[in-house]
Structure formats: C-alpha cells, structure tokens
Amino acid sequence: MSVAITVREVPDEVRDVLAARAARAGKSLQEYLRGMLVETAARPSVDDVIARARARVDATGARADADSILAARDVDRR
Picture 1 (cartoon, rainbow, N blue to C red):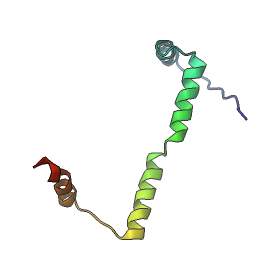
Picture 2: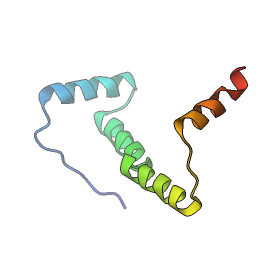
Picture 3: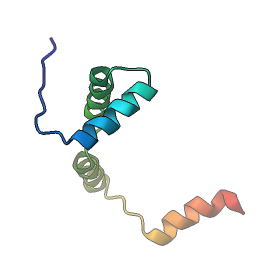
Picture 4: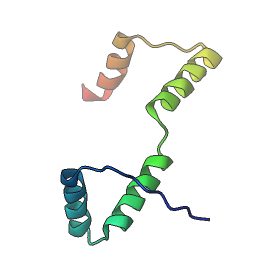
C-alpha cells in the first residue's frame, strides 16, 4: 500500500532545480522524487554499513593495517 507524503516549506530554488532535473529525465516531479526516495531507502545508511563492518571485525577478529591493504591493492600493479 502506498502513502502520500507532503513536504512543506521547500525553497523555490530547490523546487526549480528538482523540477528541471525531472524534466531532463522525462519524468514528472512526483515520479522523479518518488524514484529518489525509493533509491535512498534501498541503500543502507553510513551508520548501518559501519555497524555491520564492526560486527564482522568483532566476529572474525580480522584486522588489516593500512600497509597490508595498500600492498594487496598493489599486487597486480607490478
């Protein structure tokens, strides 16, 4: 089931920029904003990503220092 969301007091300049982006994408402003909301909700927040990474480190005890990360990155570059 869908729900309507109202956002009040959006500055005119912001509305104009978003409307122009929507028009360039061939969408209504409503379609454009709905898409942005759906995409945003689908991505985990930075705090969630950090919490998951910390939980993996705590569970595995795996640690990597900067030198080992850079060395692994550079292995195929030689």
